[in-house]
Length: 251
Length: 59
Image 1 (tube, one colour):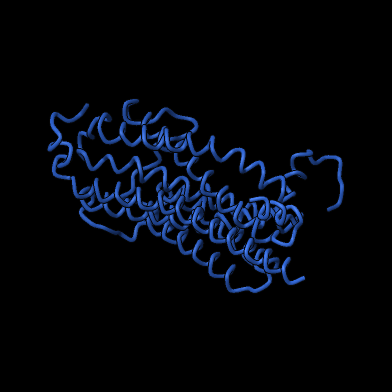
Image 2 (cartoon, chains in turn orange, cyan; image 1 turned 60 degrees about the horizontal axis):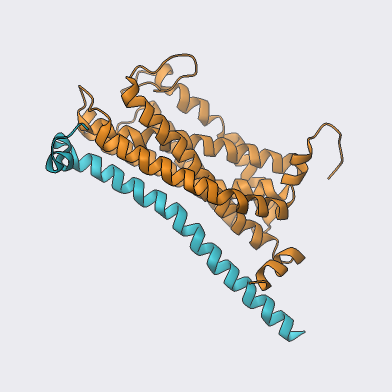
């Protein structure tokens, strides 16, 4: 890798699979504890203590899974595309591995967002599914993840596969603002965003605070599963490296 | 607390099926995302270690 003065040192350290493997190992227990505490606490809060919605009743409690999984499915996609771009530009192997590890997590979170949305839609809109802009663009996000995974496994060479999937992920990035603004651009059944950077949430605090807890909990959980997959991928790709051999034989 | 009894909690004001189905799916997807990489990691380590030992015996 070409040396340049304007890149911070940690950026180069991130490029070292060994350093990444070790730092993920150190961070994992902390993130696991945080994820468990936030998700369990947030779920109890959401199911037992948060008040029922005056229109939707208790089916409103689905929001505490639906919104975090939808936010994470999109954050995960952006991370996958950015990691893919870093891999393309700087030929950074670890970035390729991050991008590859993101795809199955994002796909599963998109499924969770779509399914909880469908289950919530039945009592609220009277239908499991409508071909609404928000729902359709979210379904496309799921298909993009599947496309990335299929493309990655279809190409034999690891570096060619990483390049091809990075390009696909970057092209698909156009879908993210479409998902975000779909509720504003088109007439829709779907309600607008709960959290906005510039405004206070429209719902009372006893409803949105547990939602925020769940969103942060989902981020922590995402970090855990991503680091676990990344460590596996590093071991697999670096199996010929001396440090991996030492690590395996020391146990 | 927004429920007076456990049966009220389970019925979720008639929306029990929807709420519990959602949370069930949530648990499955979250646990799946933790168990799958854990098991894949174990399998991978065992496989790589076996191969290393075989190679060191072979040479």
